[in-house]
Structures are given as C-alpha cells and as structure tokens.
Length: 272
Image (cartoon, rainbow, N blue to C red; front, side):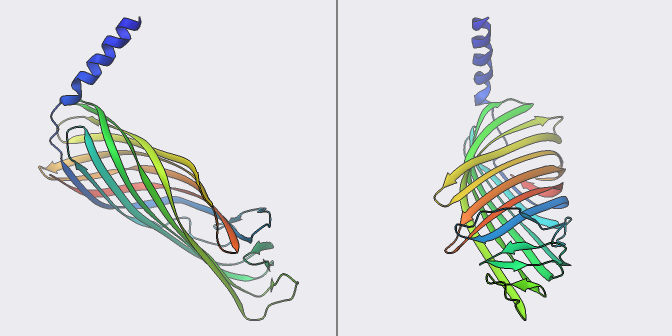
C-alpha cells in the first residue's frame, strides 16, 4: 500500500515540467455584492467591548453595493509566479437609532439620535505562488503572501448624545478612526481546463495572526469560470465569499470590526 502511494506521488510530481503558455494576466472587473454586513465598535482603552454595532440593522448602512477590482498574475517560470489584487468597498448610512450604544471617547449615543455613518475598506494583496502539479487539464497551486487591509470608519450624531458625565451634547458629535493592518495570507488554487477556451477555477485564502497591537482572521473562497473568446482576451464570472475579523489599538481608542462580503464577480482579462 505504501509503495503504491509513493509511486502515485512520483507520477504526480513528474508532471511539474509541463510547458505553461500563460505568462502574464491582467484582469479588470467588479463584484455585484449581494451581502455586505459589518459589525464595529470604537471604545476607550480599558473599557470592555460589549455588543458590536451592526451597521446594517443599527445604522442603516447599505448591504448591497458595487466593488471595483483589479487583479494580475505574472509567471516567471513554469512553476513559480506572483499575483496581486486590489479592491475597495464603501458603505454609508443614515438612521434614527433605536437603541443606546457606546462610541468613541466615552460618548453614549441614545435611542432617537440621528446618526450618519460610513465604513470604507481597501484590500491590497500580493502573493507568491508555487504550481506543484500541472498538466494539460489541471493546475494545482499553493501561495503565500501579504494581505494589507485599510479600514476607515466613523459617524456623526445629533440629538440624544451624551458625554462621559451624562451631559447632553448640543450640536453634532463626530468621531472617526482608521487603521492599516498588514497580515500574512496563505492559500490554494485549482484550475481545470474543460476545453481550450473554457476554464473553471477554485481559490481559497486565509490567515489568522497577531502582530503587535493588531489581531485578525480572514477566509476567502471563490469559484469562477472563464471563457477565452480570442487568443489574448477572456471574460469571466463567478461567486466569491469573504469573512474577516480585525481588532486594533489606537492612541486612545480601541476598535473592533467584523465583516462579511459576498457577491457575483465579473471580469475582463488580457492574457499573454
């Protein structure tokens, strides 16, 4: 039994030297988001974080939005490659809140307050990929790289807003915070060639890490199909689902963000 397994592995890795035609690929597209949910909270240091604020339910933020996306890949040998991605998600909302919650530097936003809020998230990814199995039909690849997330969130509120001494604030209370969090990411990709023009792929990426004052976890899954209608051009479509949890510490405030994002992807690609 062990000999059969060893022979099978040797057969698999003997295919590594298969010739690869695709050296460079650039894709421009977007995601039509069907589910965008964020929970977040800003609190002073040493104040336990209690219930997170759901931006859709509590603040009236959009749960459907559009996302621009840019992807690229360069294969510098048959088995070694690099790839990158960039996309940005924005969401805004305005609502008369229905329950009290703590926000910022000991400020309490009470029921009946009028709150306008925003949440912006920019994602930058760069990966090294190793194609450990590649033949005419199938390619299997593992990757590792850097996942950089920039988060911007904040709100303005008027009405029933009180400071840490319980004094009602007149006018508009505003608060915002941002953070850039670099974390390692690891992943897997598989691609199957249905014929010379049609390809199906599955990609998964994840990280769980703590670096200094930042803590984060991320998982992403994407299933897509691509049709090459000309020698150097293709169109694609698929479905992607991402979940992320981030925690960080600022100079005086702590923040915590939990986000889920899923939707239909479309793209146009140039292949060389």
